[in-house]
Length: 285
Image (cartoon, rainbow, N blue to C red; front, side, top):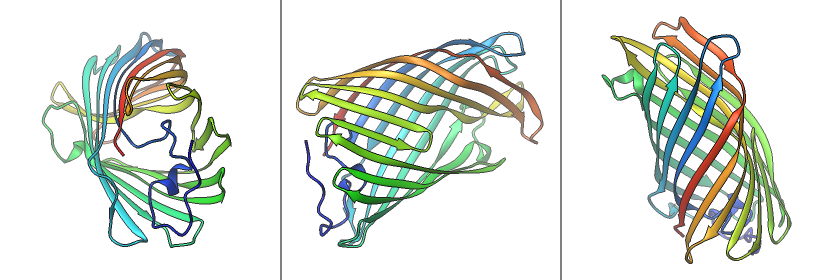
């Protein structure tokens, strides 16, 4: 599928992906997903949501020199949350500008990346600085061999109420030409390409989000935490276009609502539920 990126070359996306397989190729991606209704553990009722996502890289890597390159893109998520809480049925939006910097010294097995994602997470009512937040990550990658790399770093989130930082470590492994296995913090993905037209994925990943919401003239901070485990199949429609369908279950679901002053209004775990996603992506370079 691909050969190992030579250490003498200038920094490029191959320094972070292990393989140039279609399973990992940079792509413009859109998807529609659904979380079936889950019941709260202690409170009456529950919640469910539908989500549309659009991830667009604006440009191929732009080189400052052989060691440094940057990329610009955007990410948008629209979430339709249906809950038996004070916020009821709410339309939630998260728009991010993605600024990515990559660094590697010629001949080094070490690569470094910083991703900054400023943006708005809001229900669209009375947008102000409380809706502004910054997500990001700072990470490293060590190419142990042509088929194994170690990765690690920290992921952070900052809004008007709090700052959160999560360290993580993982790996990228290619046991054979058709199989890729990746672990990054809590997110796991294995991709098997039996032939040029099909890719089969097994995924465990985090979902959810945090938004600023106005309800009855008051501001609330809404946090949705969720993980999903799913199996997906992608079919190649043309040279660079892939259509995918995933199905599985969510777990470790939790919904939390705080006032602008940080007072908890609602917090409860929820049981597991079903999950599905339909996605379309186009490889861009």
